[in-house]
Image 1 (cartoon, rainbow, N blue to C red):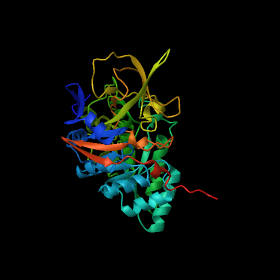
Image 2: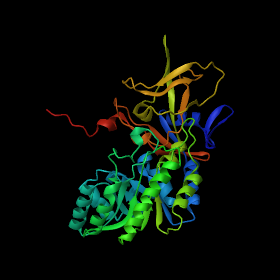
Image 3: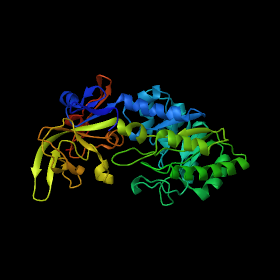
Image 4: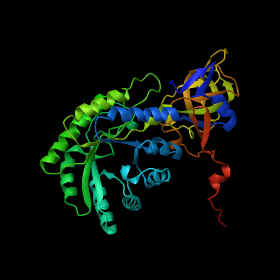
Length: 415
């Protein structure tokens, strides 16, 4: 646990608010976020990178709630987006288009037009075909597109294969040995302006060494470009710094930042980073109520009202989240499979958890602020969860729970 989620008299609190109270007021499943935790993580990045010109572009995919985007925007953040929809969210939340970098391997023409007309900072181009398309779209509307190439350094991020993006077999980025000729090509295109270089090797990385190995390869390429008079405005080292879900020991933000700054020593080029999970992951919990306790011959099941549609990570990656009772008790703590009501064998939130709980009790699935609500779905016609933000003693509703009627409102019956 962190300072923002802690027990007081055996009851779990977010800042100064009881999570039991939140569950009663807003129902479950419910995502609850700590404003102080969000602000603290962002300030840690700002302070660690203060010695040089930099821009922190929050990775919107981690959690795109407008309240969170607005909070970071007011703190000065830029944004890393991967779709036109995310750009529209950023703008609706008060984010500045001029601080947006657009990543992703499959940008459509309409998304390119939207971003060009909004005046974003840069497109992180991920293929030769995308570069050609962007040049054409920019020419059609008479705008010069600012571009960087996302270079794939073939560095092992030492993370889960599904969230490792910097190896040769990845769909992401441009192969390292193809980058220089593509930069030459981009520099000669009439409607592109080369402004930077981008590299992102994966997510939930718990060591500094992969970041530095990638940075060294990127900087060697920067020097090759400079020798050909292709001078860059910024170097974007992406995101990927991990958090503690269980027993991981990821580097502190200061250690990570200082390692990047050391690699850049002697260079004045602007630094861009794209943190996501590290800013929001430990700032949120998922509250869920125990519906039934089911005792079997081989396993016991705590059947809760949250499911894989609410928090996909365990089913998708076999990811671990600590699960805590909101109200501690002196009851025995048998081992439970914590499972949801969705009709899939893979619908679980946690395996083999020692819990002293009864039907009706509320559990908190910890470290659920990143890739929780953002990956949720309506599978089994389940409305998505309510979201709230805790700010000291206050609780703000930041997204109402969906209704079933909303889920089918746009569907049509044919004769």
